[in-house]
Length: 295
Image (cartoon, rainbow, N blue to C red; front, side, top):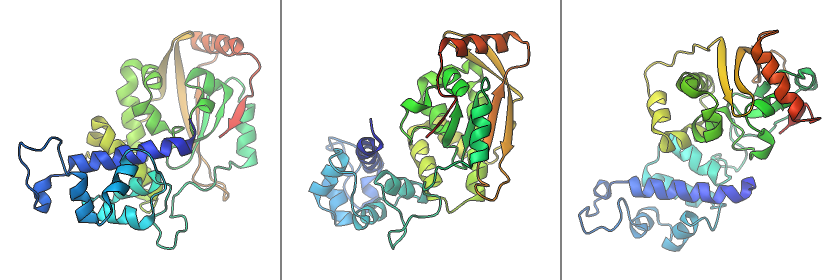
C-alpha cells in the first residue's frame, strides 16, 4: 500500500473518531437516548464548521485525502482540537499548518543521511543498526536489523518509525516478550525528550496526537509527570526462527553540522556468545541481501 492510498483512511478515521467522541451538549445540541450514534452528527458538525455534510462524508469515507486548508481549519476549530490533534489532522491530509502553504517546522522534508554515516551502517555487516531522526523515523538500517526485527523495506515510510512499531506492529511487539513495556516506555521517554527540545515540530506533534488517540497505554505514559529514560544495557529478542538473542544497546548521536538531529543505534550481541552465533546463522539464512538500504 502506498503512502498516498493510506492517507485518506487515516484522515477519515481520525475525523470520525473526533466527531463521535465529542459531547453534543458542549455545543448546545440535545444529547439523549434517541441518538443512534454517539457524539456529534455530521449535520451538526457541518453547522458548527460551515463545511458541507457532503464534504465531511467524503473525508470520513476516505474518498479524499487533500481537503483544503480552510476546510481543515474550520473542522479543527469546530471540534476544538488540541495542538497535537490539529497537527495530526493536517499531516494526515498532506497539509502544512503554515498560512502561506510552505512546509512547517519539523515536517519531513529530507531523509538524506550523510555519506560517512551511511557508509558506516553499510560496513556493519553483522550488526543490527538503525539511523533515526528526532521523530524516531527509521531513515537507514543494516541488513542485520531487517533480518532480526522486521523488513523495514516492506513498510510504508510513515510506518518506519520506532514509536509506531512499538505500539502498532504486533510482530515487532512480540519480539520483546516481557521486556516490551520497558522498551516501549523508553521509546515514549525518548520521544518526549525530543518534543520538549523541538516544540515547533508539527510532524512530531501529529505522531503524538495519533498515538494518544489510538493507544491508551501510550496516552497514559505520555501524560505522566516525569519521563525518565533508563535505556536497558541489554535487550532480548525472541526471534521466531533464530530463537533468543540478547543484544547490547549503544546509542550514538550525530555531531556533524549536516544532520545534527540524527542518532545511530546499534544492537550487538556479545562476542563469542550463543546470541552472536544465533544471529550469524540467521544472517547466513537470508542470503546475499544489500547490507544497508536507504528509505
